[in-house]
Image (cartoon, rainbow, N blue to C red; front, top):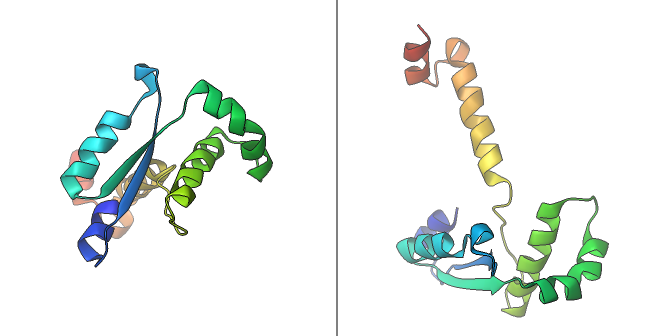
Length: 123
């Protein structure tokens, strides 16, 4: 989505990602590489334990249903707003949606023929 936006936009596209001190949970380096590859203005938001604890009450109060993704979105959204941006698209859960679309196309190949390679592999 960010790549498509960057290609069409007349103004810089900004990307944000949460980073963590614990390297086993930190996707920051990969997000930085993707941002560099597509040419966005990228900002990393370091979410330390103390920053998380400072914001947890406000984050929890902002949720309409319990979800950990909602907490991630809260901290990223806060950084986005602090950067002066008022509209943002989130990629949270996007891979699940894409996977469901791919799976649906694969499963329906017999009825709609949209996934030809899947049809060949099933026969």
